[in-house]
Length: 176
Image 1: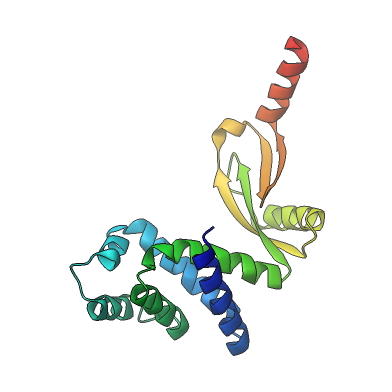
Image 2: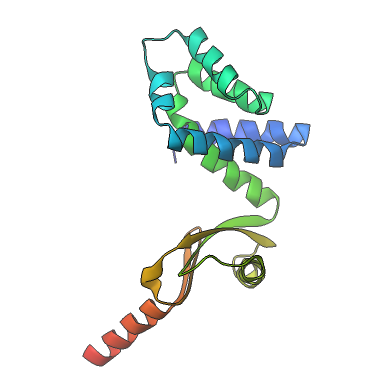
């Protein structure tokens, strides 16, 4: 994580807290990242010297017209400072700050099938306490190679209760 992205994220988070729009900004940043990931040309265009800074800011204002003005202003500031390549890092850092302040953490849960809402709630309840949080925001990733069970990743913590992991442990024990 770059220090630049961290500083911008902290400033954005403080502003969002003052204006009481932390959740809205989080949602807008998630949408922004989806747009950037699905159309990487946008980041190239915003970094290109072929367009003036004013034109780039105008493009951002048009594309993200429905987003919070705070997010649009942040993007335009990144364009001004020639730091638009930091936008993904900024968004990720902001999400960490927001979830930390709200007593939650992001978790990636790997499973062989889509988890139901009640399963996600059970996992959130069980694992949130282990990392000292009130709840987890769960992103479910389908991974058939696990064979069964789940692997939960929360920051640097990994809780692996998958059939594939148990078989690997058994293999190590038997082969010795």
